[in-house]
Each structure stands twice: as structure tokens, then as C-alpha cells.
Length: 282
Ligand SMILES: Cc1ncc(C[n+]2csc(CCOP(=O)(O)OP(=O)(O)O)c2C)c(N)n1
Image (cartoon, rainbow, N blue to C red; front, side, top):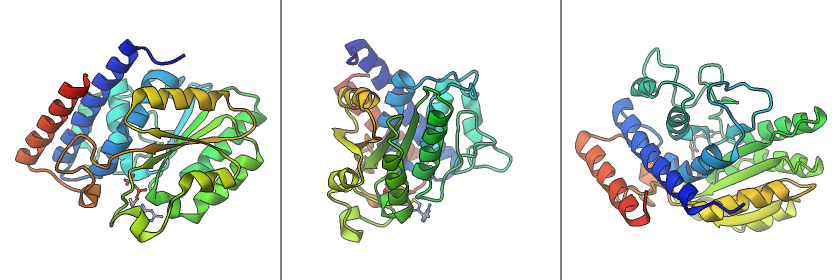
């Protein structure tokens, strides 16, 4: 069922709160992967606030849908989502990446409720997700596996090995996302190594490919629902996004892949987020 106007409004509000939380964590932690955390936010909000079968009070419930953040450096942004969803007390995020905190820069599945797999070394999440999806099929379980990758991450050959296996096993219970913000750690993806046409590449590997605006909840929701109905192959949703989304001095600047904020920059970032959501609602 398409998302209602009310659902979209709620998602915009959540995305706004989560983006502010990302700014806040980056400020208190003294630095973090803020650009990619801001680009992935709407994908995660759509999944966590509408589509995933989860219970934050029972994070290991057996029939839960699984989420692998393959671009593990987005852990800061993922923690903001998990905190907002109530997997743990949000106040814990004040100590993000500090000694004794459960949160390192990359989330640890043994320490962070809601984190199904520890990631950070790029190129491994899709293989983990493929394994989980094969497991669900073997156990005749109906839960789904979701995997969010970075576009720069797709330079890793292991992504494509996993893609081959996913298609071979006809994993229609697996939906992958590519956060296609077109920037990696040190510049534009197309200047460093050509990834276009990513659609054609995944198609050639036997995947269903959907391509959407990764900041448009209606489009994201439509694609996620379509993927659930596809039979006999996995789906990848390539999401056109903006690195640093909502913070004007970070948008499309690869230098904001990782950075720190002083209190002036933090306040400017809050203002940018407020201005954006005043326009789009939320
Ligand atoms: C195997 C591996 N090599 C290098 C790195 C260092 N690294 C961290 S983030 C990053 C760039 C990733 O770019 P992208 O996937 O596009 O991430 P996004 O723009 O979505 O943040 C790199 C090279 C790593 N984490 N793992």
C-alpha cells in the first residue's frame, strides 16, 4: 500500500530529528562520518519506521527482519536511528566513540542492540546479508534481510561475488540498497573508478534493479514494496542521494566524508536542517 500523507509527515519528522542527532553526535564525539550518515538517513527511516518487522524492546526476536549496514562507517547515523527507535537510552549517544561507551565509530553487534552484524571493513555486508537470506530460506522463515551499501564500497570485488551468489540462490527475501551519493572518501566515484551504469551492472548479475530518489519517501516506499513482491531474484534499490544532505555547507563536499564540528558549525547545521524541513514539511 502506498504511504499515506500522514505516514510521510511522520517520517519527515523522524528524519529531521535523526539528522539533528547526527549533528549532535558528531559535535560531542569530536568527529565522525557525517556526510554519509546524512545521505543514508531517509533509507533507514523508511525501513525502520514503516517496513521492517522489528521490536526494539526485543531486539533479537527470531522472526525479525535483519538489517546489515554494510557501509559500517555510517554507524554514527545508524546509532541515531536505533536510539530514536528506542533500542537503547538515547542519552548513551552523548558518549559515542568515547572510552567505555558501547558505541565505537563502527557498531558492534555484541554491544549495540539492533545491530545484526558488525561492519566497517567495506565489501562484506552483502555477503553477510546473502548468508542470512539463504538461512531464512533453509529454515522456511518469512523474515527479510535488508542491506545498505555505499556506492564507493561497490568498488570492492567481494560485493560482486556476493551479488552472484544472491542471484544464484534466487534470494527474493533480500533487498539491497546503494546509497548513490556519487562521492567516496577522496572524491567523486566516477573520477576514481567508473561505477556507472550501476543499474546495468546489477542487472547483468541477475538482480532486479529499481532506481529512486533516495530522499523521497513516496519513491522509497514504492520501491521497497515492489521489491517485496518480486519473485525468484534479489532486488537492489539504487538510491540517488546527496552526501551531507540538509546541511548546505556539507552537501556534495567529499571533504565532509568525515569531519568535526565546533559549536558555531553545529548551530549552523541545525539551522540548515530546520530551514530544509520548514520547506518540505516535518
Ligand atoms: C575494506 C576497506 N577499505 C577502506 C576503508 C576506508 N573507508 C572508509 S569509508 C570509505 C569510503 C566509502 O565510500 P562510500 O561507500 O561511497 O561511502 P559514503 O559516501 O556512503 O559514506 C573508505 C574507503 C574501509 N572502511 N574498508
